[in-house]
Length: 293
Image 1 (cartoon, one colour):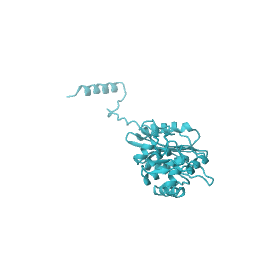
Image 2: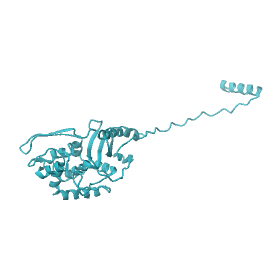
Image 3: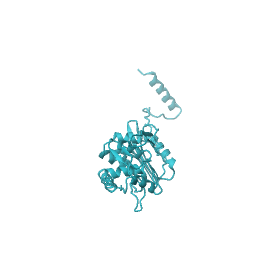
Image 4: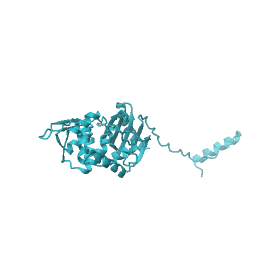
């Protein structure tokens, strides 16, 4: 017995024969292809080098001149903090000397406003190193934990090799230019260093702090330090470090934890101070979309 559907099809075929045309065979349902995956184009980036890493998966999301050696200014202090945290106790007290203050002043570096004779716990001095980017704090820490600045710089370079940062060389603990040439690194190397440093909870706490006050004691006056990193306040932001010299331009290492992933980026050689933060913010927003591709 024919169904109504088959009977209708037979009538249509018979009518087609009467008027002299043929009918196509009954077709199978059309299978529509799935929509292609959404491609999220990378946003425009500036500076001489730009790099973005998903440190959780190890995937490089963006790389522009990421392996090119160039000066990195005060981003150097990430390595300084990394070594100090491995060698010192937070309760250790560092005696600031006049030479530490003079070094920062002579080099034109930013300072933590330390004074010769101050005795400052390492836990506080790390904030003076990382927030206002104190070259005086860097010199005092390096002099103490080298011992001596030259020995400390040797530790910096040895640690770089241990971490596989093969395109990195330090000449001082602060990134200031020297008459004998600057240190250098790459955007990729500095992202890898940041990933290692951020594994230390104290480093994360320091570098993600916007303002810090070290109360006055019998060993030093009250210090008030503000972080130079304008990325703080962005969702999940955890630092890391700003930098600037005439040779290096404006530099930034930045990081954020979002949706279970840690994203770390580096911008080197930017001409515009504010634009590096805008670029970093855009890259972090894009990183989530890029991860979802």
